[in-house]
Length: 129
Image (cartoon, rainbow, N blue to C red; front, side, top):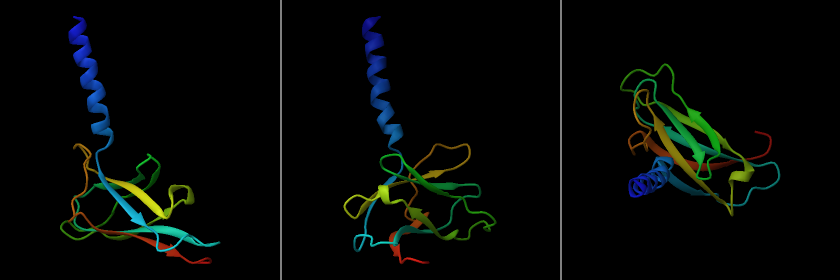
């Protein structure tokens, strides 16, 4: 009985990090350190995704930055380009590490494919914009 419990506990401890790490990890680099008043933004070009699907953007530390939830897109059309602000505390040594996750109703969360998230880049917006 103890060995069965030990095996079950080992399995649970092994599976948890795998589930928590689902998603596509991307590390982006700022072209320069942020100056006073400048802000960093992530720009994502989203391709064709299923109606009702959402793309969650979070840091690898687990801080949610935003969710892209296209609305009114015709089936089969690309969802478009979206921008999400990056808080200063998510930037470390000019790097931002992100985890992108595709959430679809009734399905397991997964990493978006290269066709679903066509590009992702980090932009700096000047003060006053």
